[in-house]
Amino acid sequence: MEFLGKVYDQYAELWKAIIRPPRDTYEIKDLGPTVFSIENRTYQRTDISLQNSRGHTILCSHFEPIPSERVAERLPCVVYLHGNCSSRLEAVSTVPVLLPFNITVFCFDFSGSGLSDGEYVSLGYYERDDLAVVVNHLRESHRVTCIGLWGRSMGAVTALLHGDRDPSIAAMVLDSPFSDLTVLAEELVDVYVSFKIPKWMVGVAMQLITSSIRDKADFDISDLVPIDHVEKTFIPALFTAAYNDTFIRPQHAKRLYEKYAGDKNFVMMEGDHNSTRSKFFMDSVAIFFLTTLQCDQLPAPMPAAPQARGVDASPATQYTPPVPNPNQEEGRAAPPAAHGAPRTPEEEQAMVQQALNLSLNENGNL
Image (cartoon, rainbow, N blue to C red):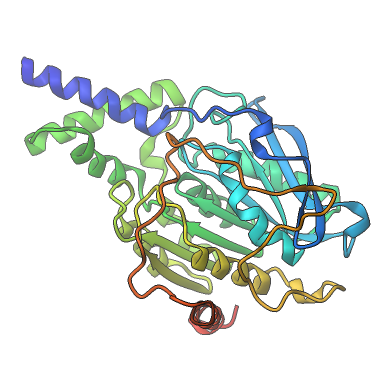
């Protein structure tokens, strides 16, 4: 009985890790100033709230140029989708990467996350409906042209679940998605149960997890199978995973990539599930969106290529990405030096260009 008691206690930790991980708490001021400058241009952040289909209030932020410096009334937009222990605060690292290319950034707290309403997360099952509300809002605002999605972990799964029902999405970056929640839960038993258990006991634990999640969060984990959605999705996609990710193993992203129907590319990174993504990767993503969101059709000339970005000391407040909560799932320790990483700005620029060429040429032109 003592053995069964240990299994039960640790199974409880596992279902909490899936639908009620530690909630990221922050204050609005942590998102940074509402008016700020990057590279001699001034931008603003507008905070709004939307309501999802379950009646929960979803708190959102839109980063875009101030009206007097907007090159067009309608601009491309990337919607950033955070991970299951995180919040819209995770998106701030994308702001200096995308805004100089006239790509606005929209981020929000999923229901059950951050400052939004809701008690539980669902790893994409209900989050896709939150995303649908956001996309509808952006369409109805008449302020955006092409919409791209950039998701990490739970956010990447949400993008996949939404993508097959909304072909108008122009591009997706999918960082560390899982392919099947039941498979992931079985893998996590090995992580959360600190002692060896018989194979039949894994089945018992899975039944307990499934039952608890159904009772508390009102969905069945067997219905959350992103790999069933990729064969009918044709949106250009960039998949990525980290070599040392033990939470969502890289094989998940590889399986999704292999079955994905649309134009696609796959990139492996150094680090783990929570590692800060390198500047090289962030710049590669910027180039991917620069191409797929039709930024070349905007009236203003675009920067030549992503480079190290200084912040202009203009009257607007200098933009410094807020320091994130170290307890968040999505990342935050600096990753180890990448094997074969660029050592000089020239080498890095060449590697970024190579990444762009791969995005354009592998499995069809994007």
